Structure formats: C-alpha cells, structure tokens
Image (cartoon, rainbow, N blue to C red; front, side, top):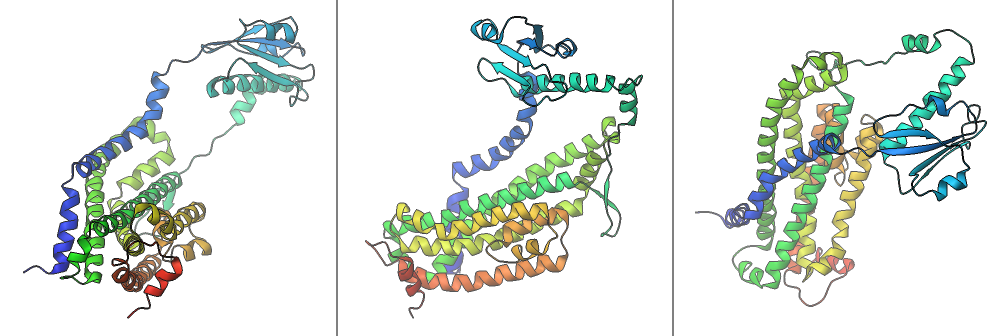
Length: 420
C-alpha cells in the first residue's frame, strides 16, 4: 500500500507532466534555443544591406581621395558649404573633415546623417577614415613599402589551452567554458524561480479552494508540504533530462562534424572547444553536478516558497513576501558574474559554499574545473541547510494553511515557527 507521501508526490508529478503546456514547452524550448543560436547568422546572411551616399567636405585636401567605396557606402566629394549640404534633402549623409584632421583627428571629423546610421555603415566609414589617416602618417616617414613591412611584422597569437590536472592532457577553451558557465547559471536560475514559485502558487490555489483543510485531516502538514516540493521537483528533473537527451543527440552529431572541417585545423581555440565538448567525462560530470545542485537549490528555495504560499490567501500578497526568496537568487546570479571572471579566487570559493548562492556560483565555476572536495563540501552544506530550513518552514506551513483573511507580517510568520 502506498504511503500518503508517495501518493502526494505521484499526484503532483502526473498532474503536471500530462499537461499539454508541459509537453509543448519541453519539446519546443530546445528548438527555440537552437534557433536563437543561429538566428543572428541567418539575419546577417539574408538581410539586405543599406546603400548610402556620403557627401565628403574635406578641408584637409588629402583624406577624401583615399576613402574607398563599397557596395553599401559611396563617398562623393562635395565642394559647397556644410549649410548648403544640410539643406539639400537629397543628401543622406555628410562627412566633414577638418584641415588638421591628419594631425589631430579628434574633434576635426563629424558625420551628419538623416536618421540613424546602421552599425555596419558607421563602422565602415570610421574604418576608412582610420586607414586613410594612418596611410598618410606612414608616408610621411618616407620609408618604401612601409605598409607591406608592417603587414609582414604583424602577428596574431592563437594557442590551445591544455588541462594538466587530469590523468591525460585534454584540450580546453576559456571562451567555451565561459559560455557553458553562463548558460548553466541561467538555466539553474530560471528553473529554481519557475518551479519554486510553482510550489507557492499550487499551495495558494488549494488553500483558497479549502482543499488543504480536507487533506490535512488524513495527512500531516509536513508530509503534504514535502510531497508537493518533491512532486513538482520531479517534473523539473524530467524536463531537464529530456532536454539533455535532445541536446546531447545534437552535440553527438554536430561536434564530430565540426571537428572534421579542414578550416578548423588552423583554429586552436576552436579545436580546443571541440575537444572539450567531445570529452564525455567532462560533459557527463557537468550534467550530473548540475542535477545535484539544481535539486539542492530547488529544495532549499521551494521550502521558503511553500512557507510563503501557506501564509497568504492570494498571489498578489505572495508576490510581496516572495522577495525573501527571490532576492538571494538574484544576488547569487549577480555574484556569479564575478565568479566567472575569476573562478579560482577566495571570494568565488566562499560564494559557492554559502547555501543561498552556492547553486548558481558553483555552476559558474564547474566548467573551469573545481577540486572535488570543494564540490562535495558545497553539496553537503546545501543539503544540510535544506534539512534545517525544511524543518523551520514546515512549522510555518502547518500554522499558515489554516490562516485566512489577513496578510501576516514577516515578524508574525517567524513567530509561527516557534509554535509547538
């Protein structure tokens, strides 16, 4: 015979996974994530470039003749005064170059535009001006083929990063680690807030329908609260697992394909990223740790949300009290931005151990490599904190579910935790 706790968990879980909204969001979100990744490139490929004619008033007498036209920007010399050019509505853009622009370009060059220029247009014009003034300055040294000499001297440094703290040397990429840390951080942040608030909303709805008064006659309030938390948490884990399978399948196909492309051989950073993604142990460990920290973070914060939901009668009142749970999560995500910049610092260590911020902070550190004892310590502190918090919140919950008609203050809620 099933226990009351298992029945509550099963009900909360099945009620949500059978919803069309859950099925649709679970299948479509990975699709939209991939679409968002490729959308900028697709827009750049298919967008129609704007074509602009720029009237150039050159008082220096040497810069305008060096400006090169492109398919999008055409430079046309203009001999009349600036006021005359501004009055001519057929002129879309005016570039004025002062007499001393070569020596002191700052303040000597202005661009007048009808409307706002695109970033590409503005970048092309500034690039042409930079190139022209640099050429004039280089020619003043009277060194033959100086531009070609500079090109031969110029060098771009690109090198792979090899992890030596493992059993065998493994390629890695700092840029990819940064991206992975940011994505994992945001996923954890999103899931903790969404599913934590789902617990709160569910309790408020059942409290308003007087369902809880009937249920608690046969089930302990603490078991009811824990059942809701665990049931909704399983829904989140199910969604994460499905996404992991879909994304893993795409990666298994795409990563080897990218690695075989000839152009990649000359890109050490990209090859390091591909090697990092191809490391099954690395990817699997990230996923396992993400699940563990999500479970801990979700349990920790959903206990707070459950206590808040039991204390109020409507979502409007709950939104004010939910700041108690929301603010630490936001602080954690903000602190994680600093952690990503320096994952090995002492501050990053303590932020990733403190239970209110550890889920987000540790997600920011994991892609860069974290000693196992630090991960274990953070998990022990997080889960131990949850056990203490669930005991406290359960005491609030058992009193709050029977309170109606008055929004309690924070002090009153804390008093409930001392009732026997």
